[in-house]
Image (cartoon, rainbow, N blue to C red; front, top):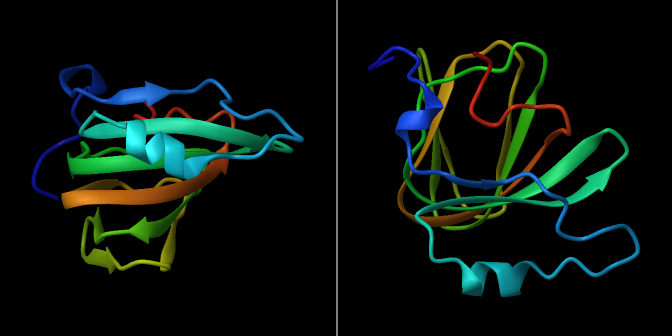
Length: 130
């Protein structure tokens, strides 16, 4: 790990935890991707039981963090996405996914713009546990 966990406030993330598409509505991912102007955009798309599906349109790197009570699933739609763990780096290509188990320190990064879906509990704090 190249740096200790850093407070999320020092990073320019556009994180939207509101549910954009309620049940029984079409989830229009292409429109959100097209409209995205942020370098690190995270929008909750919908809620399924106690979990949420989020869209990430990302470029750059997130800070090192962990989630003590929640697993995270990342699924790449477009681009190449990296998940740095303390002892290895996972590279994901389009249509590949990976689960980061609860309690595992990690950092995500995208050298070029990438589009990712994430599945996690609705209670998760995206920037990590404090």
